[in-house]
Length: 191
Image 1 (cartoon, rainbow, N blue to C red):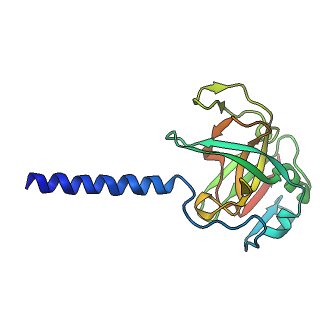
Image 2: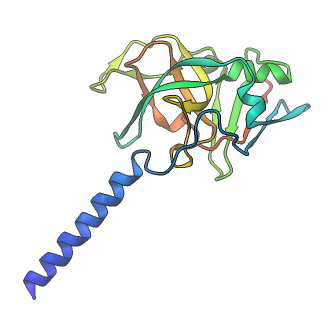
């Protein structure tokens, strides 16, 4: 009886470990960077609103750089070569962003994150080196990303559109809770 319990416990642990490993990386099929993706994004300032298709977002001036995040439990995601649109460029479509404003980012699963004017200016973020030791922050850009490492961001990694705390230099890790997945709405809240 004891040997059977030990075997069942071992199988259970192996299944849990295998499941956890599958949740931390890209395991499903990915779409090529040029492949058409059906997704819409609403950009608003509360008085005007614009709905952009995935293709229209990709036609905007692109930002390219690096992104690397760590979850609140210490799991690293990345490093990624990132391509997307800076939030500042996106917000220009609805009158821009000014001091005192905030930007709300939402996803269909109900997740919501707010960036203040300091963060929109690339300040106020904690950054880490590869050993997760805090380090001085390089220049930071808030990005609505649509590609990681030259491929469309897969659904299991938060695609097709995901917020990234981007840098121009590799090797900087940021806290991942603000990397909103499946972004479908960006809204300026005027100061």
